Structures are given as structure tokens and as C-alpha cells.
Length: 261
Ligand code: NAD
Image (cartoon, rainbow, N blue to C red; front, side, top):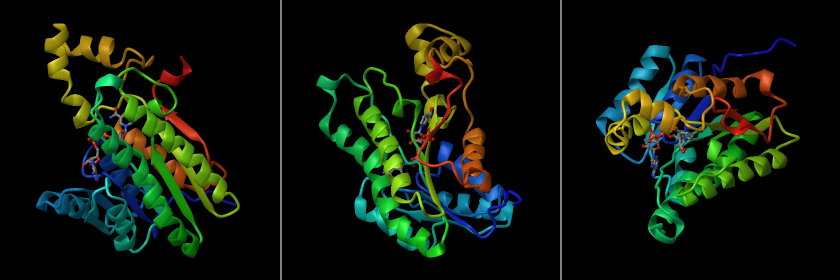
């Protein structure tokens, strides 16, 4: 049987997609022909304009739906408002860096809610929709920190390991259906979030931009290069094609060799 790569006729819901990796994933899914639903917790004109721009560029239907991924009921409402959800990309995420004994409890709760529990709620709401449609893809944007740890990122690492576990359980519960669930584990990706950290780090270490990137940020990334949002989008599209129909319950690292160390 020929392998189908077009996603025309599919609807993709991407959480946390008005910036960074989520936006890159939305672009690549739209390029492959999927209709896309963008999301974040804001409701600005520019959020809706972004969706309109993607819709126009790829001649697909693109919408923006506000929903706060720290709230379970809003996560579930996002899927309901989307109306269809063939592809669910759980991407929304935040970070906070502090030693465990100084880690603010409210930051712990927010990271666990946004980076992990939101995926439980959206998946719970999306699986019946996928079953009714007879096809589905759950793609969780975890992290190299879903497979390994670093100091001072306890909540993020706990949440991302949790997402990898949730991915495996989702895959087992859907194993005999035409639905797959996988986690993509990026290393460092040059998103606005990461870019914004470069000037301060240059000052802190008295280093050039190149030195900060190579010796601080990409210290653990053997390729000494960032992954790009387009590469993450392309990996997501691959997981939606027929070529990936038997790939389920696993992680795909896009980390320049980080987890091979
Ligand atoms: P980003 O800050 O550019 O994007 C995060 C997105 O999540 C934004 O669209 C933001 O609006 C949204 N968001 C935040 N809180 C939300 C909430 N309460 N409700 C709804 N949306 C919310 O960061 P990014 O680097 O693109 O990160 C995206 C995902 O990729 C995260 O899960 C992150 O952990 C993961 N990741 C990033 C990197 C990296 O190096 N950038 C590496 C590994 C994993």
C-alpha cells in the first residue's frame, strides 16, 4: 500500500502554539494540508491574526482558541470547541529554575499543571473524538529532560518524565485502534524563550554570543547546534503519516545526540 503523507482533511489542535515550537509545528502541519487550531491563554488580536495568516498561506482552515492549560476544565473545553481533533499536539510549557529546597510551591504546581496534567485532560477529551473519527495521533512535546535530569529544574523534569509515562499508557490503551501516541524529546531549540536568555548569560559569564551558545547552552548537546522549530514540525508531520502507523508508545529524540552521552 502506498504511504500517504498528505494531512488534508485532518484537524490538528496544538496547545501553546502562538510562539516557539508550537507555532513551528502548526506551520508544518498546515503545510502538510491539515486544518489547525492554535491555542494559548491570551486572547489578543495578534493571536487571531496569526491563525488567519497561516490559513491564508496554506489555504487551510486555521483558528485560534483561547484556553488556559493550567486549568483542567479549559483543557477539555479546548477540544470541545475545536469540534474535531484528529491530531493532538500537547506542547504548552513553562520553566522555572531553582534548587528543590528553594523552589516556590506555586511554581511547582503551575509547571505540573501546564507541562503535564494539561496533556492528561486534553488526551482524555480527544480520545473519544479520535475513536469516533476512526483515526488519531497524540503527539506530546516532552524534552531531553523527559529522559535525563539536570539540577535546579525539578518540576520541569518531573513533569516531562510524567509526560513520557502518560504517552506510553495512552499508546497501550489505544494499541489495537488506528490511534498512536508518541513523545518528541527536543534538546535545546532556538525559540524566543531561549534567545531571550542569551544577552544576560553573555553578561553573567563575560562571554561572546558564540561562546554562550557553544559552551553554556549547548554544553550537553554534542552536535553543538540548536534543533529548529521547523525540524520539530517535520518530526510531528512524520508521526502523522502512514509511515509511522506502527510507531507508538515511544520517544523520538531531536537533541543533537544529548541522550546518547
Ligand atoms: P515558548 O515559550 O516559545 O512557547 C510556550 C507556549 O506555551 C507559548 O505559546 C505560550 O503562550 C504557551 N503557554 C504557556 N503557558 C500556557 C498556558 N497556561 N495555557 C496555554 N498556553 C500556555 O517555548 P518553547 O521553547 O516553544 O516550548 C514549547 C514546548 O517545548 C514546551 O513544552 C517546552 O517544555 C518544550 N521544549 C522546549 C525546548 C527548547 O529548547 N525551547 C526544549 C525541549 C522541550
